[in-house]
Image (cartoon, rainbow, N blue to C red; front, side, top):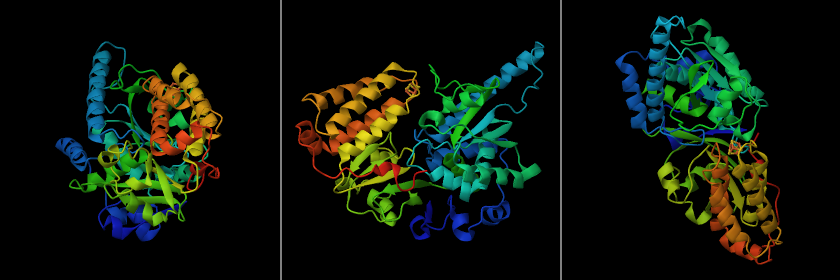
Length: 436
Ligand code: SF4
């Protein structure tokens, strides 16, 4: 995987990959000489740090984009409540935990289930200490007693890098950290999946009526944050005035230089793509397989939640897959939908049957053998699966398919009319390039 940090584009301030850029070293000595020591968060500094996270506008970088400060506050309050319950129980002789003792676990989610994403893997290889610093900061905010970094099977270089970094920190670590290796499936990184697997259950999403209630691991509350998100926390802890954090993006498809890039949020999509040298782009899949297609005519759109939201997309997991002129967007969408249908965890009817039916419709559409009602049926089916699963897997597929029917509408109509576009069906773009 190519790792590109363009210092001119992201300035000289603290960045996720700047230590790697400067020294090509990821060891503890190189990390500390570049970033300096991590400040300790105690007392009032904790709330002040959370305010800085809110001020920086940091949101989750695993896909959902939830505001990080809101999550930190909610989990801190929840852990605090649980701590009171533990103390109360200790008085009743049912637990021995001292009231106020550290409790709970921070899980760093580097599962990166999106097949076209490599950013978390690159981050763990190039800046493992920044991720561990951020996990320690998150642990300090919620009062957790340990950290588990989850790296999927198959991403061995990332797991080795973070394991080595944990060893380098040794007794100097503020909370003990460990590495777990869950199986790498698309939904394995969904937070209830991950915590379920860590608890010894199958790694599939749980049905949760109230997602504000913390997940439990060995009866202790768990806080799950994406690896890139916690790395940003480590930068904000060092520079509380840090505004507009950068973002890691994995660019692949029809580009000359696929790789992981650190970019400015808010830059036009065209500028974000340009260092990867896209070749005759017709559209780009933004956010990942559960993201949305954006036409080349909208490449002036700012790469940010607000900007992309105006064209029905979101940064998601930081994935950008370029589709070239001359490739069939309908065929590519059909391939992705078929893959996503196969990645269903098999527990929710609308997901299991709905995604399979959507994938079948798209396959028929792509090959020009669909019946006349296919577009109307796809619209109905994508609406019907949205919000109907224990996790957001079907919602992402529905969004991606709906965006394709808009961006490639002329092609979709021609395909539905029994006139496939005649464009060569290239090999699956989204499986190429910077993917695993
Ligand atoms: S919505 Fe799909 S992927 Fe999510 S839990 Fe249900 S069956 Fe599994």
